[in-house]
Image (cartoon, rainbow over all chains, first blue to last red; front, side, top):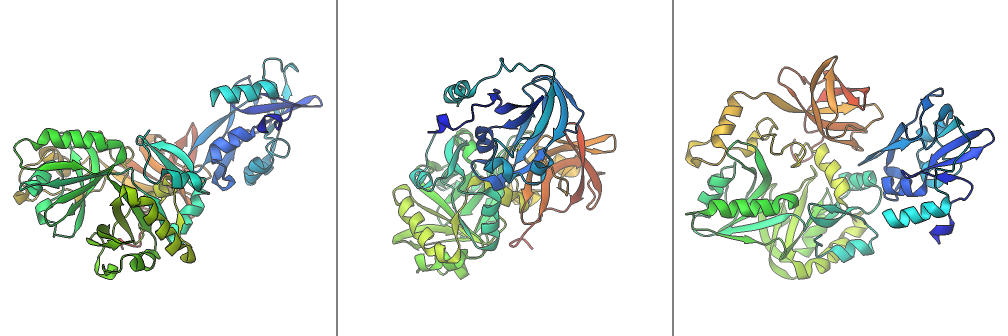
Length: 135
Length: 365
């Protein structure tokens, strides 16, 4: 049952990013759906991930990077406003991390958020429903 | 969406299916770049049943093709195949195609996405010509076997046709998997040696399975359209909608070998316009390669400093060259091989270098 597999400890954005509170900061990553859509289930098809420098200020919805597969490019969008304070450079060098573990070691950027509220974003159940309806 | 006779085979193999030219086609069975390597080192099997196949018969068949296509059909030896295009009066193509010159027929292979337009255009221009135009797309499956193992795999399945005697861009007929009179051509869209075969739709699965069984010991695997696109780009072969389209003519695309201005060909649609282009081309198609991490994509602009040169037509990571590659149009005073250029990727510049086309060839030395 895939519907119960997506973690409930975070919120989800309509372009398939997730936000997970981590102390005073928040981690941003992409969902298994995003990875699957881009790679067609073949992690070797992911070829490049472009992430921002620490210090970048983002508004909610801003594009902070791009991820490429052999045949496609996809924007990475930040669901919340804040400052990029850390970047997971491991992922840039080892894109297979995104396919193996998009939820933990596959985080992309750490944000110091303007607001702690994530009420505008979907919880896991709403995201499942969103996927079922849109895709 | 249309399905090929091999649709269920792809589904059973777990292929990722996509819409392509109005057809539901396998883009990949596994990682795309692994599929490219399989074709470069062994061989791969492709379902190309989406390609349009049109048989032209009748007394005026050769004159008719010489009127509507850019190549010189009357000069093609029987049993040989030539590349050509259908162009409008303005010299811009509506499609590109292969022309098989048979004994009492001319057999055309066109792009899936343009088949309907091609057929309508052929019928519109048939006029006084005594020809019959038969769309065989649905009646025939088309299967390609591409890569250096191809002949060894295919030969035992077609015992009465000596494949060694079928030269590059030639075709013959043999009994393939018990199907007499099967068209077998030494053609392809990968830059590798290989064959394309045309079998009745109802026999497609049986022939495919026989090829899979015969090829398995030699590492032959099914290959999707994703890898096919990278293979053809490495081989410097154009794709309609990328290197050529309603605004990009074959002369500037470097396809003059498929365009005949021979006086004996007579007048043909687009001739006058393309003669003008040939006398005064404005741009040329070049190869680019980039060691940078980003893949060139269609539409990305190329810059020499502040001068915008043109735009990328096609791009891909190339496992064969181990770098990112692409094609682009640039002005005639630019694009010298080895010259430096920058690709604008959403505002960021990535270094690249002009290089010769094709990037790779085993068949065109």
